[in-house]
Length: 364
Ligand code: HEM
View 1 (cartoon, rainbow, N blue to C red):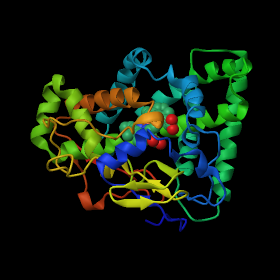
View 2: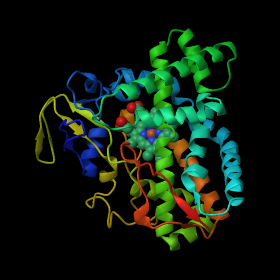
View 3: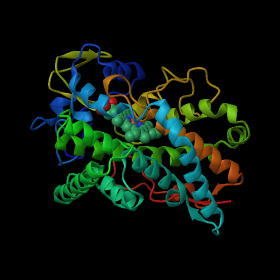
């Protein structure tokens, strides 16, 4: 396929091929080489080297280790009561209004942004700023990147200012922890800024998209919705199937092949790029029977929504917890929730690499 920049990439759509490439047992799919001049990319703004997504093992493992402790089950457990309280507060505010209400602004966006900002150590008055900057960073465009660069610079400056504050008043958040690691010589300030910026984006835009997609899927499947609403024991299975059927975007991991390789009969030459849209792999009919259907009872529940291997999603436990709490609380509070517009009138933000709805009007 051709990216908006005109760059050509090989699109990998089969589950088994996607799985093999993500696991990369032969070490031949390089992310670091995406930063070389002339390498294919989604926008005219080149990816910075040295990020989680633009380093290969073992370098990316070093970066992952610096932050992984903040995304494990123990940390998520500590965050759960606040996640529930934030969700309940937003649902109270929603209930007090006269429908229709835009669910994106009322719920799907504020929960993930509040949680990732808390985890990173961004104060509540910085949440909106961070969201606006992140939106500009996931823009796919062949236009001049000036505005995008300006946004990046502002976010970087803000992160460094916050880091300075954390040095004076350390807390139990990720930024404070990274500042300490920086002072111990484990990373430099450029890496600190890039980690925080990446986590801010990866930590909320993805989940917002998934919550919106999941709400629509559940509304489209009223019998399943009734079970999900009334039987909490099915929540895990439902969330996994919601993750499988809802792609957060049309793109996916991109990598440069470092040796000629054959993928399902097609030779991909060294230096060419592969794009792995995990949403396509998740609907491969070779893998799943009736792949587009939402069937939480299906036996084969594994999926590639969170990737696999060296770059797999660190935030998966956080995302799963948010989906369970937000969706469960929403549909228990509003059993008659319904879309307040024609399905065909829903619009995605046009230039973003993730499926971000402009709004999701609901009534109850
Ligand atoms: C439903 C929500 C989410 C989905 C579907 C999702 C999906 C993904 C996917 C497909 C990857 C693999 C990318 C690759 O191979 O390059 C990934 C990586 C990652 N995600 Fe998520 N993600 C979600 C939420 C989150 C959250 C809440 C965070 C928290 C900060 C997060 C942080 C990360 C990180 C740190 C990586 C690893 C990047 C790397 O090592 O290259 N994600 N995610």
